[in-house]
Image 1 (cartoon, rainbow, N blue to C red):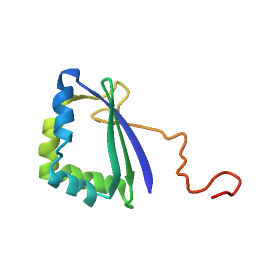
Image 2: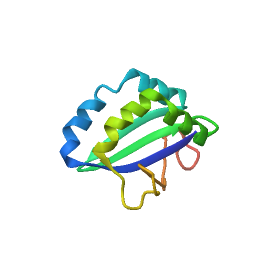
Image 3: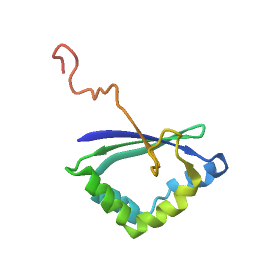
Image 4: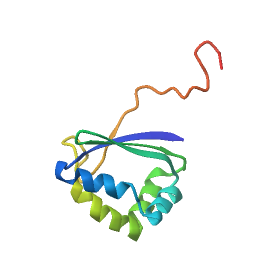
Length: 116
């Protein structure tokens, strides 16, 4: 399993619509996310910054992302969401969400010194 964190700007004029849309994400889009081995997916909002976190449980991330991008319902969802977002200046050319590096993780299963 690999953890991902990504960033993108939310255009301020779309804040309410974006939040409302995400209260009722289409079941077909959620099914595709699941079929592409994404688990524990969350999106947070701070001012105009969207922060996405998810865990990837598959073995070929690029193939699963191509599968997701090829899904017609996901494409339709993205066609609604994309105009509400603005990639950050240091995003990859043609990219949307900026992947950021993890610098610390603690899941609580084991404490330093061997204590569980």
